[in-house]
Amino acid sequence: MTATADPEAAANELKPLAEYLGSVLRRLRALPPLDLDLTQAHGNVLAADVIAPHPFPAFDQAAIDGYAARWEDLAGAGRIGSHPSFGQFDSGRSVRLNVVGDLGAASWRPVRLTPGTCFSVAAGAPLPLGADVVVPVHWTDQGMAAVEILHAPKRGSGVRRAGEELAVGQVLAGPGTYVSPPMVATFAAAGIGHVLVRPSPRVVVVATGDELVDVGRPSQPGQVVDANSHALTAAAVEAGAMAYRIGICDDDPEGLRGLLEDQTLRADLIITTGGSGTGPGDMLRRVLSRPGSGRGSVEFTDVAISPGTCFGFGTAGGEEVPVVCLPGEPGAALIGFEVLARPVIQLLAGAEPVFRPGVKAHLLETVSSPGGLREFRPAHVAERRGGGYTVQPLAGGPYTLSGLAEANGLLVLGERVTTAAAGSTVDVLLLDRRR
Image (cartoon, rainbow, N blue to C red):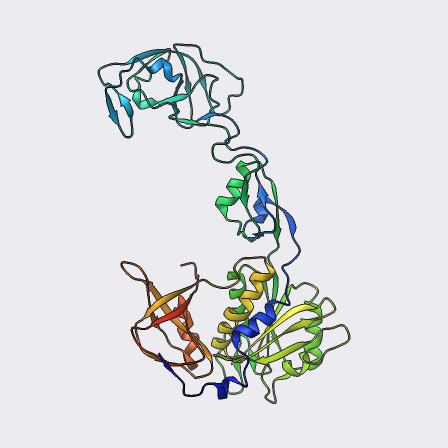
């Protein structure tokens, strides 16, 4: 990679991204926990350790359909041969046992084996007292009153002991763990009906600007179709939030103040897009940067990032709800969401870690980058045969939006990088697009 001769000239006027993110995230705390029904908890993040109150399995049980027996009674089925799946056996000898009953998964009366007997059992059925092996059906003649055991399994085969998978007092998952469908099943199996979780953040998305028009018609001079509020609402949902698109707010100071005041009553985070610059039409910055009585304020910062550079963060309303202000250009807004808004949502949700996973990748094409700025460029990442990753840069700069539509990663080029040569190793953030 080639470094700029003097990148500090531009960087001195901009705050480094890492420093800015640190200053924002230190001001936030995860949302207060809620006790939720197990099914409702799916998709949330645990707020405390989940400890098994009961064992799983809850009792000794048959793991397979077959015949529950005492291993000692099968000793007559000789053991001169062996097989990794069948255990030891002698195909020329068998053992005959009396079948004294049938047990299904719903059986509840305790029963006991006596020497020379067995029970026909279904998978999940309680194991008779004294039984320590279940012979698979296909290793027998499937008799009803008496059964011929053709092969002798190993002791303990076909049996699940109480607490074998989950023991009483075992920590099943800790704080910050995402509640997945298999985890819901694990909790339910251990007898857990409710868990303490961080709620999904309620995120309100607002697009600002007199020039904005709703989707469904082409732009005319002086008009711009509002792509951002739709895209950012979808991005917030993908990040695990409950997102609400408010739509377009004109550059009217009183209307903007009133809208934000109303939304603070139902939001854990407000995301705005547009109006964050210093131009004559950038009303949002002028309105939010003025602190009101008990209404909070937003600080706008020029950050060393490309695309974008200008972000806002602060609070609004009497509840001092966090506010993230993103650029109005669609590609820059989506990149800004990834580097700023998404980590904020993750932190509010109690998720760990708050940042996307990253990998080192082999760059397939030489790219240039603006000096003094940390550039995030759309890219396609692929795993290499034999290990590692390759990364193909996609359209960036003024075409970032179209590049993002194809991307499954973001190529990250540091502030001191002006050229990254093909074949070099670069950092890439992995985007989970669920495809």
